[in-house]
Image 1: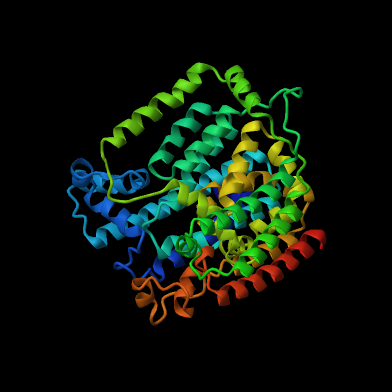
Image 2: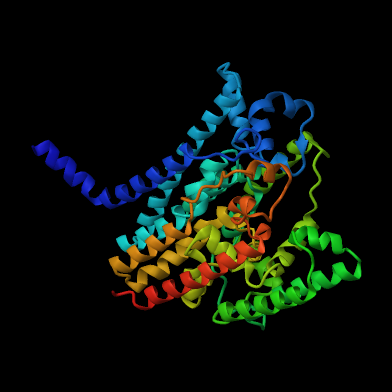
Length: 493
């Protein structure tokens, strides 16, 4: 009895965390054992490349190499191939699929471990922990997409950032930067974001010169103007076809104008409470030279240059990627339908964007008071988040949830309020909606985005939303916003 009592006392403080983890693992198991994308025998479209890396890396890397975009997307798939080769395991379809299931489970366990490490580091209340847990794990991506399309980099990129970010918060900078190098072979944006946080980790002196304009108002003006300018430029260059291909719809000037106006108003209403002023460019250069020992720069620059030079010797021109076109589509996609970006983010992330919007004054203060690096990294996050393809920012989610958790922790949310928000989060994840209905395989094969059948999948990616599903999710977003606003205003109930 004494042994049982000691065990109970030992695990009692972790009982709440264990309960959350068990619920998540149950939902995640449903995802892994559920339906699979009916394209390329469950591999998917983008997944076909990652599948090929897992199957043929040992020969392809040394023979033909990979194109100069996707060679930075080969982790962890090349490890599967090396593991299979070392143990003489046949890289059959069944074995490759099983290996991905194992990796996804291992990846989720890693995320759980480091999530709770960050919780302990911030000493959040149980209610805050539960809500941030739901924001991080109970969304469409975790509860549906990981199991539906197992050959993808997003989940692993998120883990690399989470682990590296944790060590950065712990001020274990060598570990943080070392782990961030994995991002170069997975999703380079996460690596560069960690380096921004690392190089500008210290606050600048109070006397350091700043720009004269406020960040929030400047962004709310510049982003819509850039979007409108991109449309005007394409029209002047007679690139209507390119504009339509980026918006996945026929161009309508009145609709684009309406989208620009609504986008500008939305950004102003959200960002106007952010009174932060960035430092002048010269200040960042001067402080970088002053604060960063040159050995720290060498610690990052030398291996970075070596890795890139080595990978360049194994690249080809098979796949064309245009960085300018990618930046252009980020400015164009928010104009497809009015407010499609926040609608798409709610569709993908649930209540997270709504909490950030309603708490933006305190949230932005928490962000920008951390460090100059955090300010730069968050501005970069905002840039990528303007694209209605929400998956582009999911690896950086921990950088948003930590300051959001600190804000929520000060609000003293009641258990009932948190339970209501978690229930809404699980509802918005729509993981329980089946995707594989009759005709969806044909829709994938024909690149058909707009039919009701295809939209069961494509509605999760903003740019591909059809008018019908945009309207549905717009209504859901408005209703969810009303509920979230009511709950956080009546947080004591």
